[in-house]
Length: 142
Image (tube, rainbow, N blue to C red; front, side, top):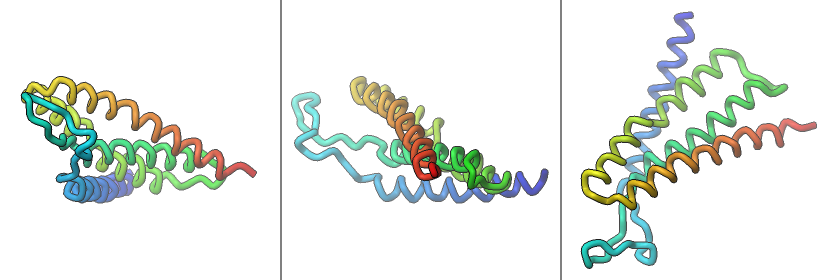
């Protein structure tokens, strides 16, 4: 039992570090000027929290992939599944950060961007999860 906690902790540490790296990589990315919005008479690109959105979408894809892989004919042992799903994906994705970022949009009265970001953050990860599940099913077919 203690070994399972260690695998989850190791996976969580790696997932959290990967999310931090993704956030650093995408922190200054903005929508192209053609997709910029006009607010208060000024046109500017919007810097959505792309790192968090990317981590949530990619994390859902990976957890779908790992879950289906664990249940497929190839399978994986319990420790590996815990390391990859509860550990890595749990540390990589982050609902609390998502809620904080949406609150920041609301605080700044960016109502439209708050709604767009919320919808994107809830819908895209579902598609990514289904893609991960489907990909393993497709690959594991004989």
